[in-house]
Length: 194
Image (tube, rainbow, N blue to C red):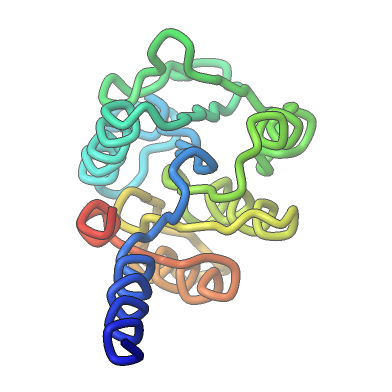
């Protein structure tokens, strides 16, 4: 009897740890600023935004197919503000437009998520080192369990004095600082775990 009970507990523990998100009714996908101005020809082109948008679209499809909460964050801009075609909001999905780097500042996002009884955030978007980082940090500070999908994010080269910091290094260094705030996964890892 004891051996059978121990086996059952091991199976239960394994099934819990395999799921990246234990309770899908309390999770929200937060897509940050995947907008036209970050794509070729836009006001603030990023390095390789297309693969990030494609991965975000995979996450979006998964959340929609499983009737899970989706939140779109957009940054107000003079032009190119439209959401990218791969992640355009569907009817009934929440949309928050911000004027600050932090998606929680002055948007009503926090109140909305709490009203929906969300406890877990899955975050992706653009730019890794700016609005995505701010969303991850703020979400964690507000008590949410945060998962950041690293290959559904993109950024750009930065300049400091006479030095150019390549987008890949900006992205990786941001991820390395965010590992204290979020579980960091690839799109494939997340989808396989759920």
